[in-house]
Amino acid sequence: MNWVKSRLLFPLYFLIGTGQAASAQTLTLKEAVNTALQNYDIIQAKTNFVKASQATVQQNVLDYLPNLSVSAQNDYGTVNGQTGPAYGFGGLGVASSGPTLNKQNWNAAFGGLYVANINWDFFSFGRIRGRVQVAKAILNRDEKDLEQEKFQHKVRVSAAYLNLLAAQRLRISQERNLQRAITFKNTAVVRAMNGLNAGVDSSLAKAEVSSAKIALTKARDLEQEQANRLGILMGISAVDMKLDTSSITHIPSQFGPDSSALAAHPILNYYRQRIQVSNEQIKIYKKSVFPTFSFFGVMQGRGSGFGSSYALDQTAFTRSYTDGINPVRGNYLLGIGVAWNLTTIARSRPAVRAQEFISQGLQDEYEQVDKQLTAQLNLADAKIVNAINNYNEAPVQMKAASDAYLQKNTLYKNGLTTIVDLTQALYLLNRAETDRDIAYTNVWQALLLKAAALGDFTLFINEF
Image 1 (cartoon, rainbow, N blue to C red):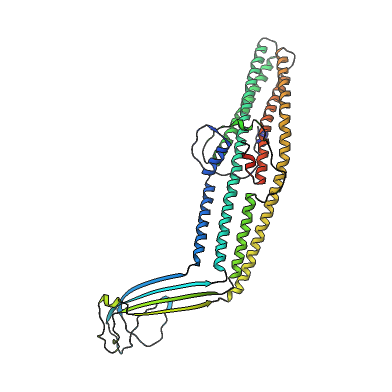
Image 2 (cartoon, helix red, strand yellow; image 1 turned 60 degrees about the horizontal axis):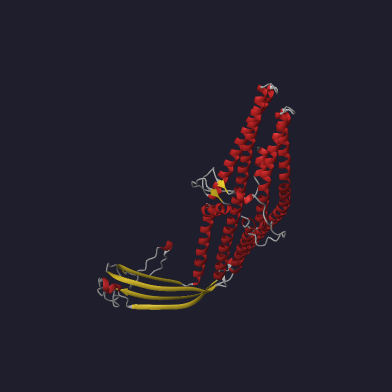
């Protein structure tokens, strides 16, 4: 059965999945694909990545808004001042201010400070717009990644579905082969008991039955393996599935265009968008050398429990909270500023070169994937031709093997041929049934391979 298994497992793309319980019921290919798209965790994860990118775009668009800060504080403390230098090392600065007196005192009152500040980088040579474009490019990349993941998963599920169909047909063929072997054994035993054939014939017939049972067990094992693989891709756990066999009782009505145009392939779209993200990053790095022009404004209000004559009269203060926090003085400030970090001119050049190399690397990856898909498309066209040829030959082989088996079986029953000839005819019939089952499925596998290469899943699924 190893050669059967190797011919059955048609290589396409990748595998992965999760699990729920499922009962054996008729499952169509479209239902299998839809269930897989809903349950597959990688698709759910990439859907969330797209939502995160959408939120990031909104965040970067809001960077156009100015920074507006408001603050308020109420304090209680003394206001002793002293002439001399001071530095708020490590951010440890104190805003106590008052007259410079000849001695320390502990007069304390309440005070309040209220500030509103606005800061707006109104012109930065397109850096904010560039960040928005990068965020949009990342969103497009994640959307293309989700599309190509869905496309590949459809292909994976369809391939697993066809493999399971073929495994089930092989199991049915092995069941028929076992029934023939049992009938053959019964005939041999009866003829040996009546002295019409040598006793060794019955031993050979029993060995053939055992061989048929082993082949059937292997076929069932392969069917369970393929059912489990399909279940994993669908996000369920099952080793017993009833599939829709009517879908492959005919060959596809059409096999798609011969053109090798792959421009709209979901995988190539994803790789192109990766390049676009890198190119947008290059633009950002190039704009980082320019200065930023900012508008700023401050409105300040201040209250104090110390009176204006406190420098001369240290009793001119109040410990009333409401009097201390009441703003009695106000100031405002408006201005325009420019900030230009000149060292970014030198630092940006290596960053730009590095990102350009990344873009070139991504372009190389794109070219490689494009070549692989083109080669796969050529291979798919060749496999379609071969599969059709085998499909046309399978009935001829089946008819000849059936006739040969019927002839040898009749001759053996009448003592006109040996058990070796009958065993050979039984083997040829079993192989013809296996080749027929695989030939039917391989036509659909070849069409699926072409749909995968073209990036057009409808070419395949519309046949069901």
